[in-house]
Image (tube, rainbow, N blue to C red):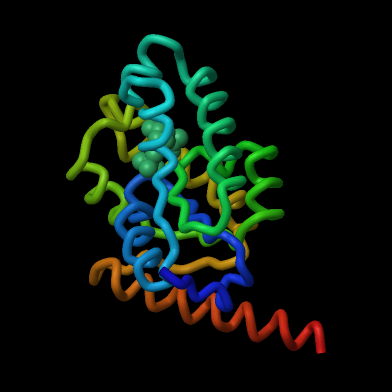
Length: 186
Ligand code: S3P
């Protein structure tokens, strides 16, 4: 498999954004398109811990989860160019953010509250939303996290028409970023 690394300058592409933003489904399609391996950080955390994310939160707490998350993402980034979907809280860690900035092109998949709510209702397994008012939780997380997600290199609106439309926006933006980089160098 020969990867077309020109659009990413040989770097990884890291997807960030809230739960339900579509990081995994978009990430898989984007990886196919860029001919890069796809990795899902949450899946790797489950493999490393040997139990589900819900179990990690329940038995060891969120801080322990964040420790494992930081270590797993650091290891994954060191493995070379890939499309990496991160869990919604990962980019809030300043050390993870620094490493992402150094080793990848970051993409924030931005989505509205209603879209996130609808999508997160479809799939459980998210301990932060296991409460009486997931809408209020998502709203609070948007307020806390959106200013930080905005540090990503590329920001795209996660399309409701499905992952392909969002992938197109990302590849266009990667192209523009590459072109801008060349312009700066010239
Ligand atoms: C979290 C998001 C989840 C998972 C964990 C915590 C968060 O990943 O990492 O439940 O803090 O937003 P997804 O964004 O893939 O659902």
